[in-house]
Length: 452
Image 1 (cartoon, rainbow, N blue to C red):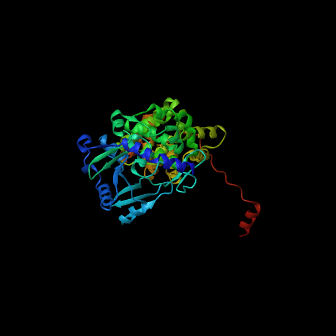
Image 2: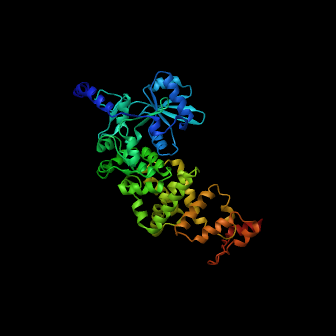
Image 3: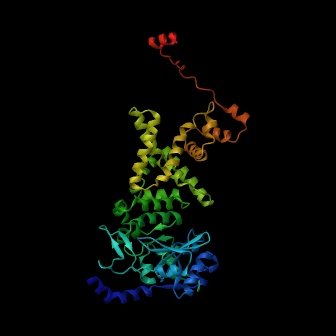
């Protein structure tokens, strides 16, 4: 009741203060024309506006366009409720529990539409907003106005609204100026915002790496103290955020940014060990650099391959420990794979559907060492050969195995049958095979045979 009274008394003053900060930046100043907006996103905003609702392109798309980048997604914010949005678009669906959103489909494109949300005071009576004991928001469907919506967004550079009708940018928190300064700044009190959603700490590291921005000092300061809050985040959300970082096209810089902020302990604590070893650092650097090049070139990247590289050295350590304890190589490898994946899954919910591919890539590495007889021929048709071969090249590039091994397979896979036969190595001369002793037939059997 007290909170509601405060809101009634001071609410109008607060809203007026927010409104006074609004800058409507015209087209001639920012240069962002509606022709640069995805047609499906324009269709969504135009339809909503024709239906009598406010509708804006919002967040990262506006930011990226101002930076001269091509947005990965175009999101729309509106004052229409999810049900009202859904009613306007035949090909749409309402999704989400923590935040209720609408996905509108146009051909192969999907536009995510969110309703303006409140950032005001709430009480225990507000069933649509809930937090846990640490202050983390677990459900937030309290709708508000556009000014409130801007306040509840994470960073100033993401609180930008583009109106395709007027071609104006509505800037409530100086986001355009921060883009010009290449600064990532949290809206509101950073410590409070991190407690509301600890994922924002990971987003700060990801955006700083992706945009090549510096993190504002006030935004960075609470991270070291609050990094442990990531343990309170569902592993599935951690995985989604980590995957965004790894597929951002700036994974190498992002991983180093995570480590610089001390955030990797809740996700990939093994980075300390890997990056402290020259060989491990070279391997991770090569893997992430190659991933960045593929993403920037628009080529597909396999999440299974990515996590196979990140967990490789932890697998090796576990495998060697089992061998030292007396376990035979084959079972030691498979036990180590299961143990490493189970340990990692406690922190990061790597989907089990990726396990098979990761295990095949790992187990294939020993088979690349076998270059005699029919073994290389049997490996070539393996469905994961290309992934295993690319992994081998990373190991060669980092110095973990001889470059000659990678070169041999590069040549062998495309060579003629005659060349392949000439490339095969001679069988290793090991200990002579012992002949199998045939057991003597029982005397009774001999007598029965004689009688027969």
